[in-house]
Image (cartoon, rainbow, N blue to C red; front, side, top):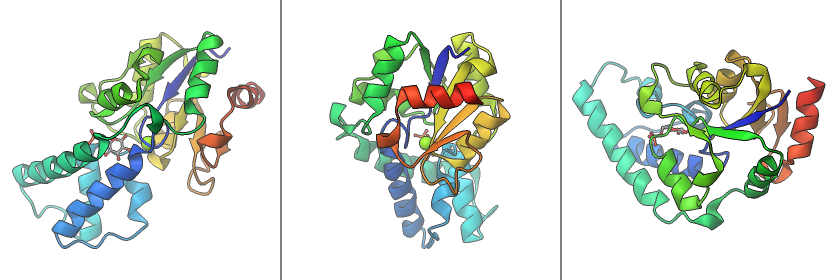
Length: 220
Ligand code: BG6
Ligand code: MG
């Protein structure tokens, strides 16, 4: 029986995924790296240092920098990102999401956040959504990033639920892979071609209706 919902933040609750990608692209440009468009889907959902590793792989520069140099690059990207999210407010919630959270609350579903971002709690504050969530996984406590299932398993544990009692929402291929590896029901938000591993797909959040998602979960 369905008892809880687990949400990624960037690209699911708000459009901050775009800000992450812009900041990574600005960092890459400053390093003389020309990232192909295909890199975007690989960067989505990955932890800060895993994202940097993806960029270095595309640039053919894996192993060329010290840990301190990589950390400085990650800090530079994070500073640009934090600047960009300053302007977020309650209007920055993606269309349909606030309604979905409200419907879930009415249905007495418990809710957790499974975002790889250390900035996610600040974003939830900006959006005035913190009060909807019973648990927020601290990504600093994790050993492995998405697509490893650890973050979704932790969220489920924090809610005190079993894998077949939750629905999890993602916009990233790595995130959908993490949900499926955790044995949970995955809702993919975005292009069905890149999120084909999800159990239920919508092209964007305007198509998200809790009753429809629950119906799909019950049919699975
Ligand atoms: C994920 C984003 O939610 O968080 C990634 O999809 C990002 O793009 C990751 O790299 C880590 O975020 P942060 O804010 O801790 O650098
Ligand atoms: Mg995301």
